[in-house]
Amino acid sequence: MDKSIRILIVDDHPFFREGLRNVLSTAGDITVVGEAEDGEEAVEKTVALHPDIVLMDINLPKLNGLEAMDRIHRACPGTRVVLLTAYDDEEQVYHAILAGASAYHAKDVDPQQLVETVRTVSEGNYVVGNSVLTEEEVGTWLLSKFREFGGALALEGDRFFSPLSPREMEILRLLVRGMSNKEIAYYLGISHQTVKNHITSILGKLGVSDRTQAAVYALRRGWVPLRADTEEES
Image 1 (cartoon, rainbow, N blue to C red):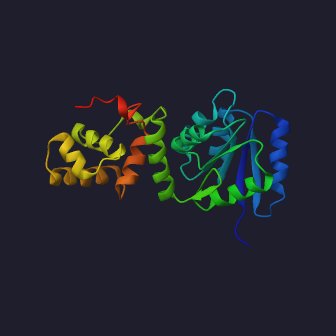
Image 2: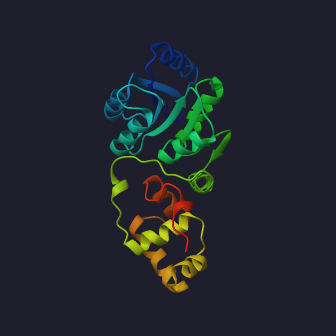
Image 3: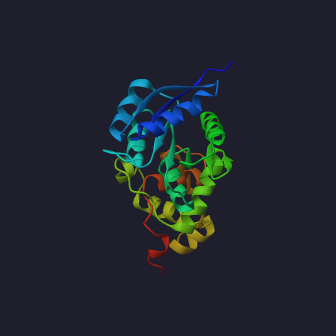
């Protein structure tokens, strides 16, 4: 049998934590290794226990779920986070996945569906709505939703640092907006080859292999203006 999936449950209501523990304990391949009742404790216990997955309410005392998730990802990059909420809609899901969640469910999710989500996330995939997405597919989904909703979630840390030159950052932002190399060249008044050279440099500096990964990298670090359509069109 494969090793058990190790889970940390985070919620400020003991009754709800108990319910989650009971649901997850019915699965022979899942082990609850700990519980936390606020965002700060969630970070501390993740560092101490190194769970595979943190199953966490988004509304928590001290640190909310998004802030706690950001700190967890910095301290324990291998730990994945499934966020739970009392309500959800497509834009809420978009911001949660953009911030780094691997899945996002309403708290009234069917118990068996939650168990399947844990298994899916443990395999390195994402759960968006009723769909299972790979890393590449979730990147494409994020880009499509950014162009629909606009905006990037502001988190602390390296969102304020970029290894890119001002021209590379300009090209990256146009790439996120969906422009082709040819369109970027026309928009900036530079050659197509110059755009290609800049994009090659961007990929190398960010350590990614393609345009989609570069765009998602920029989105997740808040390097993109709040709304693409507020940029000056000229």
